[in-house]
Image 1 (cartoon, rainbow, N blue to C red):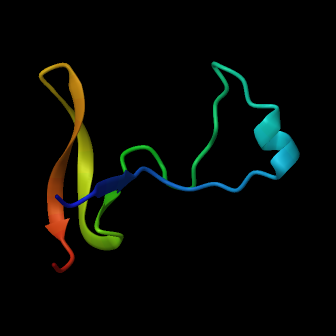
Image 2: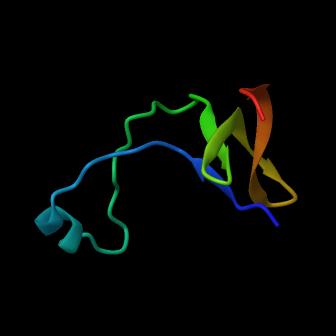
Length: 68
């Protein structure tokens, strides 16, 4: 089995800001809406994709393979 990780974006929070997060909080990421998401397999970047809704679930459509 291979672990897949989908990364929507990144941000940095200092520990105090992280402790103050509550339900409903919005955390801004470095990626803009509509930008491709990164797909990692076994910790290695293997593709980029776009988020879609499929059968009422969030999914990723692969649009670029970066190397396997």
